[in-house]
Image (cartoon, rainbow, N blue to C red; front, side):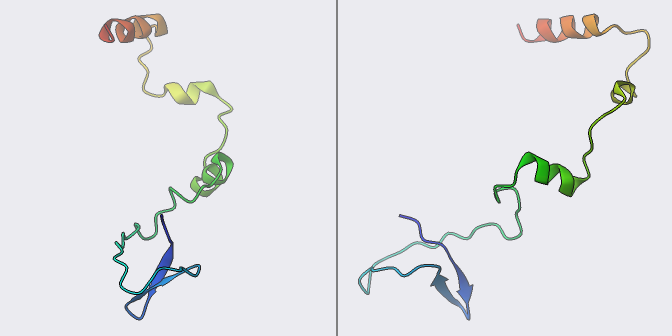
Length: 83
C-alpha cells in the first residue's frame, strides 16, 4: 500500500489519515524533487511549456539532409541494418 505526504520539520506528514498501529514498520521512498515528467500533463500542455509549434514547412526538417541523397536509399539502409 502506498501513502503520499511531505516532510515537515523532519517528520513525514501523510496527506490522508492512516490507521496503522503504533510500531508498524514502514519504508519511506523519496520522490525526485521538481520532476514534472510524471505530473500527468497532456501532450498539448507539454508542447506549450516547451514552445513546440506545428511545422508548416517540411523543408525545415531537412536542414542537414544531403541534396543528392534519396529518401528511398535511406530507408533501404535502415531496413538492412535491422536484419
